[in-house]
Image (cartoon, rainbow, N blue to C red):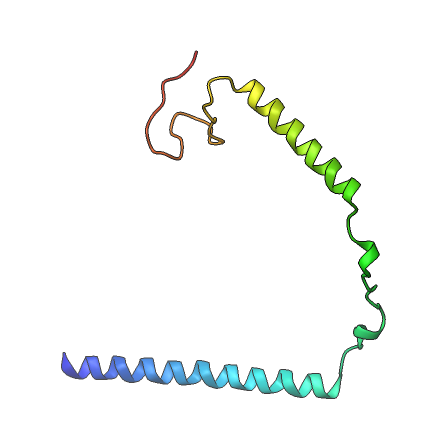
Length: 104
């Protein structure tokens, strides 16, 4: 039994050494291939546009977004009179884990 355990440990170590050696060889092959055949330099093809201070959102656009959000929230609250927020989980077992009665 003891010598079987030793053989198993040796087999595991040899297997790990083979896998690591294969990975090192693969890494070296990839490094050599990238040195021999470098890819295109795409960093110079597309230049990023610089954002200036005037390109930001205006006060009018921020106000329009705020009004739209307020109206959307008001419509959502009007549809939910009881103040209870419905769970996005459908079915009899919501995220809370408690079963719900069917509303049929």
